[in-house]
Image: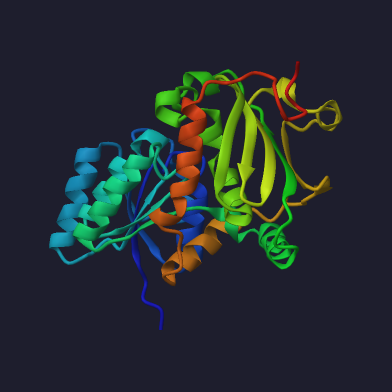
Length: 315
């Protein structure tokens, strides 16, 4: 018989929180309390209308502590807050005696991971990162194909991801590089994780373009040469995609062959939670490489349109 687990959620007003709420419900567990400084959280009613909600961290903290003293233990804290707050909220979870489930990127800097690993040792609790692309059927199939292919083959890979955003983006925390980590971190970290998971460690990391709305560069991995392009600028979307009225373009090609993975995302958070509850989630050690990759990109000096740059880079 499965024992129902108690969850708390920080950042419940955010876009991604609904996927976490659904995952908690779908796995047969309960949301005890949630926190967000914004109170537009009516979607909670679709999942856990009886759970407690707080807009002030101090009252939320006091409530969780009171529950613990009364014998209601929080087993997991799900974290859907702005990127720069993740490590603080993870520390809160661990020190409350709960495991943490954190949206990507788990932290902004490599040394933040090491600090959290120390707290894991102190508390005996775990930090899990949502790396849902590793669970996508098309990506799993690609990894299997590469593993079963010639061991000495170096693959040519193009990654393109444009998810156009309006003016609000630059006013929000997402437009502040100190809070989001910039475009490559905010919208690209899970792609870099996926690429190194399949093709091996980064051997060279070159940045061609890096600004507030787009970033592009070249990664030499153990088994792939990767040209990547990430953008939130609508003007970067190919004209044939614009003609369809679409504001997002996602493409991965391996040896000029398109990898179809536009669908299949709906339930990946629920699948992630199922694996975490079984003890099979992705921990801090597994997220180190992608955090190092985006940190290097963020702090690199772009070389401009030189070398083998991505075809979507406009001269």
